[in-house]
Length: 88
Image (cartoon, rainbow, N blue to C red):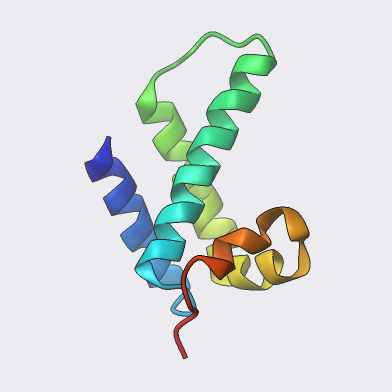
């Protein structure tokens, strides 16, 4: 599992150079957990880590370049920027 998170965090860093590795990793873990929790709450049958990884990859492709902007404007996600400093 750790290898999957590391791989996804590196993909996010390729899309967004404003994030540190720690922030990218936190985003990946948060997106992973959010997808699995939402999927379960909807009563869907668990399809495995492969599906979750595919969804997180899609989110990284679509939203990755602007995640740092989103987090700074939304209190729910602001903590993802406080634990580590943005790169400049």
